[in-house]
Structure formats: C-alpha cells, structure tokens
Length: 341
Image (cartoon, rainbow, N blue to C red; front, side, top):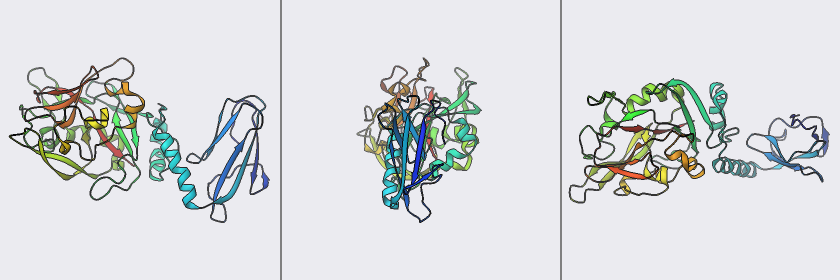
C-alpha cells in the first residue's frame, strides 16, 4: 500500500472481494480492465485514481482518513483508452516542473512515452543533462508538449512522443552568413551547413542545427529521437518577398515557428513558413515567461524558422516580443525542438 504519511487507511475490494493489496495492473485476469472508484467518507480528504500512472492521488489529507478503493473488472479496452486519453490531456494542460532526470537515466521515461500513458510525465518537467552548452552550463531539457504532432506529416506520424526544447539557448547561431532568405528556411545555412563556424568579428562560436544535433541532442537521446516529415519553406518570391513554396522533408531537429511560441503568426510571411508547426506548445500556454527566459531572471533572444521577407527571418526577442531582423547573419540564440519516444 502507498504511504501518504498521515495514517490514511485504505480498504480495497476487487470484484466485491476484500483484498490486502491493490491490483498492480489495470488488466484483470479475465482480460478486461478495472474501473476504479474512490470514496473517502465524510473527511475532507479527496481521492482520485490516476489510470495513466496506476496509482491513487490524495488531496486535502487529514490524519486517520479512510478511503475505499473499489476495483471492478467491467471496462472494455476502448473505455480504458478513454481514461488514458483523459490522463494525457490532463498532463498536457498541467504545468508540474518536476526534475525527471532519474526517470530519463533509468530509461523509464521512454517506456512511459511509448505506451502512451505518460505515467509520470507532465509539461514543464525537465531533465538535467551531463552535456554542457557552448556557454559552459549543463543543459536543461524541458517537456514542451505531449503527442502534439500526432497525425501530422506525410506519411502521418502515429507514434506517441514528447516534444523537447532546451530551457536556455544551446549556443549562438545565424540563419545565413549573408543578408538573404533566398531558398527559404530549408535552404538556409543553419539547416544545410554541417559544422559550426567562428564569427570573426566577435569570436562567438556559431552552431548549425546539424552541429548542435551532434554535440548536444544525440549524446543525450540517441536512437530515441524521432525522424519524421515536416513541411518547410524552400523558396521566396522575388516580387512579393514572401515564402512561395514548401515541400516535405525528412527531419529530426528544427527551429520553432512563431505559432509554436506565440500561438499565432506575427511577422511570418505566409502559410509556407508554418507547415505542421501550426499550434502553440503547451509549455508556452502554461508558462508564458519561458518564451524568452529561464523563469529565473535570465532572458535571451533566439531565431525562429519563419521568413519575414527576402532579407529577414523572424526571431523571439529577449524582451518577450516577436521580431524580424534584416541581419540574418546576426548571432542570436539557438533553441531547437525535437521529438523523442
């Protein structure tokens, strides 16, 4: 029995028979699923059964409370799946901010993603890496959203996943070394260039997506990084100066879009800039201060993947506002996103 620390007494019945222990699995011996009802009598204590984590959660706990747990093997697989979906929705709409580094190190994180329960995973939970960023600090990876790219792409992505972003920028970067957006986002140097470069004017190391993937992302998540298809801009019209075409490309890591960060387009030039990145990540809905800060006083700006015109890309400014810069060779933060399972 779980220890709630308040001498809470639990009475358990399974299909009408009193038991000393709760079932350890949601599936009964006859192949059905247990429906769980919790009642805590006249006390203020409130109990709720978490089907995803398969455990009892208690609120307003009073000493000497007694809660009855009634397990009945009466649910079909479809009914059980509805409970799981509700639990995932709760996790997507709840900011917890828990350190889940141990869950990651034990590999249980991936088990809970793959089975779709996200049992002990909530938006805002974070992993502290052993890898350091270019600024010399250990990287903190955040759960930005859960299953938010489900049924996107061509072919459709139909794997449970968590969307990961770094709490702070991994490094500095530039979109192109020249002031141009020719070829859109997909043809830009930050996407296509293999290695990092050195900025001669100020000595800053400028990462590309490929170098950041090799140095920071792959060492931490290995073969759990999902490959998928994303619709990315690949040309800019010389007259309208807007993104004018896009195609499906194999991707593992990309910059975020304006919609991912702000929930809308602000400076982005056209729908070709957005593609499947057309919704705001749950982390920025629940904790908007994390759009441009660590939540603890550190603020910074970083590049986004949207084209503004033939010379400018969009960025998220350190002040919290959306921006567009004609200096695509300006060093700003590199804050990519990727999916794991």
